[in-house]
Every structure is written in C-alpha cells, then in structure tokens.
Length: 153
Image (cartoon, rainbow, N blue to C red; front, side, top):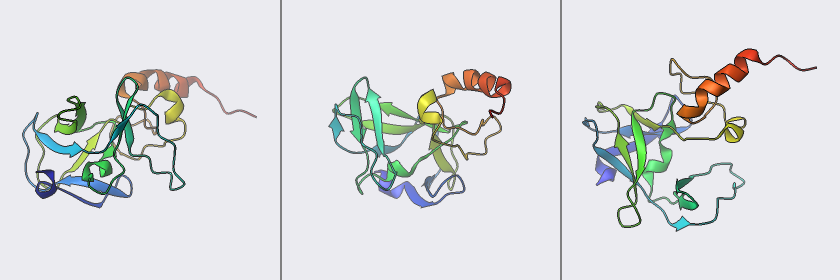
C-alpha cells in the first residue's frame, strides 16, 4: 500500500525524507514502519544511522531493512504524523496528525530522551524548534536549561 502513496527523496531537513504522493486526511495511515522486533536495544552501526524504535516498553522495532521506506521519515518539532504501534499483528504505522498535501514531507517526533538529544541536533526549522531532537514533553525543561546555562571555561 505505502509504496505508491509515499516516496523517498532528498530532504531540506536531513539527508533523505519521506514525502506524500497524494493528499491525506487527519488520522489516515501513511506508511507501515516495517522490520523485525527484538527485546535488545539497537547497537549504533558504523554508518551512525539507527532505524530502530522502541515501540513498547522493552520492545524494539528494527526498521533498517530496504523494505521499509518509512525509515526515511525525519524528525520535526512540529510533526504532521505520529508513529503508532498497533501490536504484533498490525505492526507500527506512521499516521497523519492533520491533513497533508501531496508533496509534503512526512515528519514525526522521534521522542528522544534528554541524554539522546545531546548528541542529535535538530534541523527541522519549525518555529518552536530548540535545536535538539527531543521528545515534546521534555522540550520545556530543555528550554529552561538552555536559557539559564552559561558558557563554561
């Protein structure tokens, strides 16, 4: 299904991106996030590209395979999609949060922790972006920290 309604191509956010090939309504499934599940967290490969996501407590989905175009969806601080885990039978799906237009880049919140955000700059260019890939609920705390931090010797 997803192969004809989404495509990968160069992105202004980072490297490659996932783009809508047609209009979508809010709540519509955009693309499955395919791959095997494991209870072991991923090891960062030499390429530095990690496509594994924790979809449930202690359950990881490895989306690094070539049959998973959704792996190219970039992070945004103002995402237009979310990744929803529907259980082992249906898997994970990128689902639209709002209507999308054909040609629009599909983005979601990667949900990184504070520790992960320190090593992952954000280039989404959203108006509320704080320059780090970090889960939405953690952004206010990081903003406060950045506002009150000072350069070190």
